[in-house]
Length: 206
Image (cartoon, rainbow, N blue to C red; front, side, top):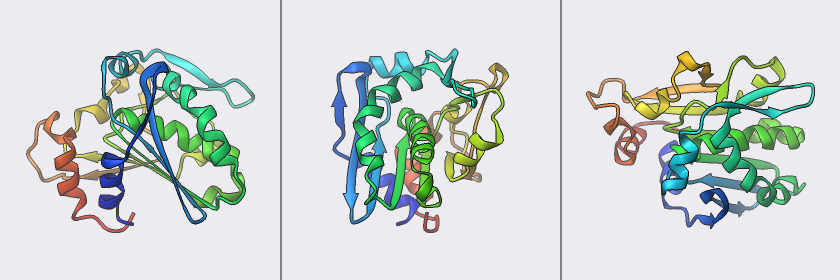
């Protein structure tokens, strides 16, 4: 599957809307592969969570690390719903994808999947299209390793991928794939799905 196809599926997925925190996700099982999709911002509650970015501890065990509080709140609403899907030992591959607000949730989901399914860690891949920064501060090597197969896809000057500002301590993790470098789009236009689709149509298999 190409990244174009994956992003197109992310845009078109029939998302399940959860009232609490306006969380939305879609899961699809295809053979032994599990696909998890997360939706872009679609209401005032999403934007409230987007802008609620003081850092909050994600894991409190020996691997303490910090993430964007608003995104973590949304993911924790979804987490108990996807846990049985991720824990199913007949699942041998997991593909995670999200756009914009949903890309941030996809990143947290990716780490969750690798942490809980180390037996298939090399077969877990995640993509965050137009992903904002989620992680705050420095990460232990073990956490970085869990996120190494997550790809942040940034189109041209996409303003969302530069938020929250790095000066506040937030950073991208995993791999950053910069597409549309030659385009002269504004930061806002660079984030629009139609321009992502246009640039991704030139990309190779994900």
